[in-house]
Amino acid sequence: MIAAPDDTPKDHPMATAKKTSAPKPRALSMHVGLNSVSAAHYEGWDGPLAACENDARDLAALAKKQGFAPTVLLTKKGTRAALLKAMRAAAKALKAGDRFLLTFSGHGGQVPDTNRDEPDRKDETWCLWDGQLIDDELYLELSRFARGVRVVVLSDSCHSGSVTRARLPPPPPPGQRVRLMPDAVAMRVYGAHQAQYDALQSAVFKAAAAARTDDPDAALAQVAVSGPAAQALTLTGPFKPAVLLISGCQDNQFSMDGEHNGAFTEQVLRTWNHGRFAGSWAQLHAQVRAAMPASQSPNLFVLGPPAEAAALAAAPAFRP
Image 1 (cartoon, rainbow, N blue to C red):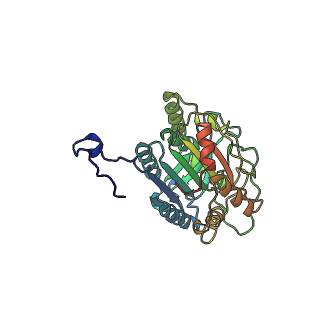
Image 2 (cartoon, one colour; image 1 turned 90 degrees about the horizontal axis):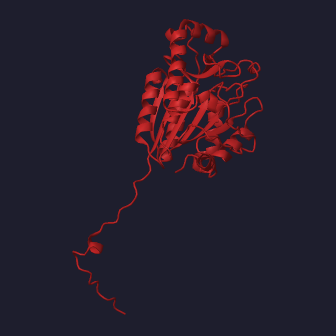
Image 3 (spheres, helix red, strand yellow; image 1 turned 90 degrees about the vertical axis):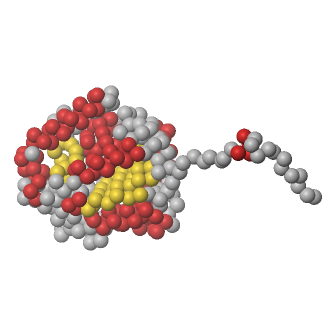
């Protein structure tokens, strides 16, 4: 049978209409790895590590293969200004349905909590090249992403687990490097730069209040933390995006450095197995945690609209 000719006039709207497709979701990533910090900003301490730059490079390569456009900040380029600039640019660029992956590999630290919302009166930090990024600042920046953006943070540092900060970590294994700024150094650094770090906490508190959001630490205090089965529970808080954080350890543990990768990042890459892993973020966390020693138990928690945060935890790891 010969098909009947199409006699729709060429100037008919149905003939001239072009098919339009929704724009492809964007995927941006930032990978920060510091093998040392500036002694000038840490009162003579430079915190040498071996594997953090490799962690950043390897995770950036993984992300690129999965369609992310990566930004890599290594050691001297891992400054406060560079990280904040890149995060704010991503927050402005990304819309509902887009993805943002942030990975950090380096030392974790602490500064005294000036607004007294921490049970142990300390705020956790990432040690960047020229100063610490306080957890209050990090969560405020994350809250700037739009509703519907999916944000995943992988943190391979000490003091990175959750909001459970009740116990001091045990001594590290002899001869091994830990990604932790020593307490004595932390207090020396804070004493020399107290005005700066106090002002940063105050600025975050005021910005959160102006935006009519809860203080970031007050929100974090309500976060439900997953157990070994990686059951990701959610928080209804000020966060518009769905945010998932998988950390290298609990807050009462150390994240260990390595020769090529940190212990946590090494296990993430091993579990990923060049893309053969097909599970969710929650399953990735569960498998990584099961493969690591009891002395370093990676943690997972989520923030944001409950249904969207739960969906993120159940979404395929690293994939669209």
